[in-house]
Image (cartoon, rainbow, N blue to C red):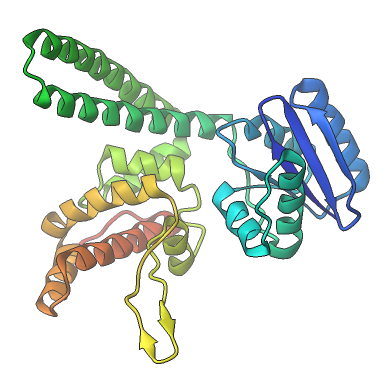
Amino acid sequence: MFIGIDVAKDRLDAHVRPGGEAFAVARDGEGVAALVERLKESGPQLIVLEATGGFEQVVAAGLAGAGLPVVVVNPRQIRDFARALGRLAKTDRIDAEVIALFAERVRPELRPLPDDQARELDELVTRRRQVIEMMVAEGNRARRLTSRRLQKRIAHHQAVLQKELTEIERELDDTIRKSPIWRETEDLLKSVPGIGNATARTLIAELPELGTLDRRKIAALVGLAPFNRDSGTLRGRRMIAGGRAPVRAVLYMAALVASRRNPVIRAFYQRLLAAGKPKKLALTACMRKLLTILNAIVRDRTPWQTA
């Protein structure tokens, strides 16, 4: 038995495969409790929910806490699956049916859900990124203005954002240091030349699988595994796609620094350039190599060592 659940702000629509049963409950404490009891009696093999901006967290936590096999998947996977089936119509009931069919056909791998502390860390890292993006946007707006009055207002807003950023970074430091495992992992990651606070904390928060997967799987998860684009005798360019954009963003900056300061990455980068590879391609390869090194360091719990 496979269950698909469409999560909305006030309602949960569920669909059962292969029976075809459909039902709905409210997305509140009573509704989630009723859903848990109903699914515990059914004994499903897999329950799949879409990530819907945080609305799914309480539902997933309630199901996982009851020992039910629940997976939260990227909504883009569901949309692509629906388009492949020719299901273009979209309602809550239809979405639940498509999610259940996805669960039955694709059977995404079960992974542990983040606990409250891990979720808080992820939210802090996400908020830090949002504040920085707002500061950059305000700086761009200020450069286009000629009015001194408006420039001063933007400068005031930037000062407020800078204060918030400082407070967030202090909270991040406190959160990391309270957990012995996170503290050790952060120290391991920062032992690698090119890895600073922002990269280490983003990896801890947004890539908890680091150190638990092999190098190919971790690269694919982040979106750094090149995909073939071949057809017949045509051999297209290998390209990266998908994955976790925030992790790729920090790895890009880390690889940029490492290509100058990390002896292993620098030698690798220079070798690719000497072979005629474009700089962007060479830097992407450095990101992938750096991720492989970090994955091995966290797996083996051994800090960086220069040869």
